[in-house]
Length: 199
Image (cartoon, rainbow, N blue to C red; front, side, top):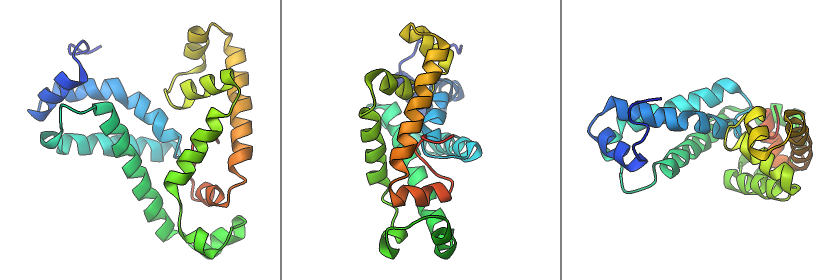
């Protein structure tokens, strides 16, 4: 645990704006794991998720002098990650041969194929998660959004690790089945991008 672990995010941002490496290290220690879990809700590939985290933090360091210490660093961080992911989807879409994609997935039409509605899919994924049974919903969010492992969740919820893993399995199965009914999500799956429902 770093020497600055008792500092608030705001205090750390003030130091970071002045080029304090220790403040940057503490913010990284505080949020890298959570950001990685968040990135994994979008990227099927572990390496893509890791790259997203590294790029976001590198950009934060490069733009440290422009950070607004009065605003939530956590919100800024996750917005930066979303922006990176959106750009990645857009760039991959340009590179993807639509003829090849058409052979792998059932598309709703050429126009819908050419436009990946990122925000729509994100909202849909969260809506489906919120419709899960209460315990499954809580377990899934702790696992996928907060980056906790099965043992940590079991301890927090006072349940066995095996029960937690069973809830994760059921939630994942339900969400995968629901999301794969949507053509635009199928395209994202072909591109190697998803919302943490698979893998």
